[in-house]
Image 1 (cartoon, rainbow, N blue to C red):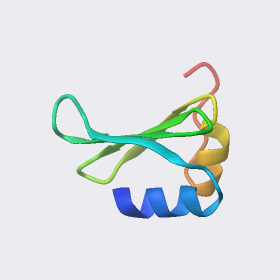
Image 2 (tube, rainbow, N blue to C red):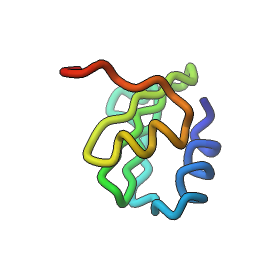
Image 3 (spheres, rainbow, N blue to C red):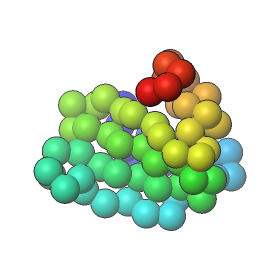
Image 4 (spheres, rainbow, N blue to C red):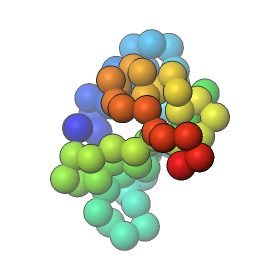
Length: 70
């Protein structure tokens, strides 16, 4: 998934992007949103959502839900 597309989809729903930075390893992006969600996007296009607002962002991005306890 493309970083700019993720930002566009989430912000279109009224959730503000609060931080965008390269990962510590330099192999992707870390996006933080005002609802508490964080999206880690690898340069290969894979994305992982975590944080307080993860459920809403996962739904917006049409990603599979994380298994319970993960």
